[in-house]
Length: 314
Image (cartoon, rainbow, N blue to C red; front, top):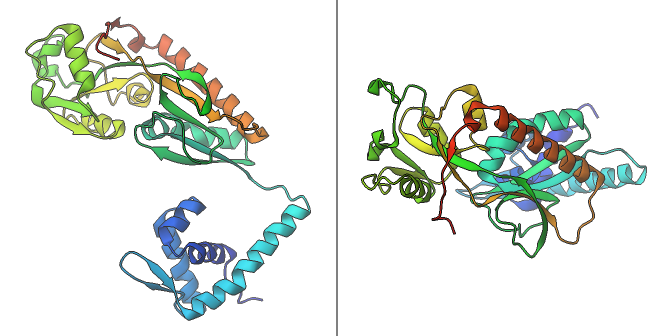
């Protein structure tokens, strides 16, 4: 018994053997592909033989690996079944799906606080870039962006939003005066996925010489905000995903103008699902965090701005 391999290494190996893929196993186990590869390599070193043959973009069980998998997999299945049968208290999982920028910039930094308060609940996250429709996968709850006219889910308003230009502190210091929008050089524009918001801002302010087609485009808000924080230009931020940048001082609002976003964030659930106790606890926490966020923004100096009309939104 003293030569029994680490159960964690065996568990990782069994999952990788089952799906014949380190990357898929990593996704299902909630770890990185590198972590799966290291665990399998460590197990191979301990057992003295290769378990997989590595090809360019796939792995294949060796004959020895297949025998180990056949021995180990039923043992894990039996253990899981027995623990369930005797009522073992297991960590309860929540399957959350959401807009990638929202998750990375707003939700993810807050999750450790939730899991400290609920040590028996774990939140598994699946993200999609530009998520503006109801999820087409198994999930317990999610946050998506839109106007709430979906047919295949239950939804409720979560957070509204306003957008505004943001830049690195001191970006306009060379002017020696309060900057204006027409002080932005066209090449300094940073666009989030499309040129829509800079065009809408130009039209709302009335700057005919402002070339909204210039600059660069990134497909994630995180990339736009990071580029602006490095001083590479000016991007469009918002009161939700840009909060941490504004609070930390990495970004500032050089102009006292904002545009309303007709779309907003919605909390969604499958239409015909029963809410489990863990999911209910998570939803309650999300609503509390949303209330706290809105309270923060109302108190912040960034809430005091001229909100322009934006007739170009449809």
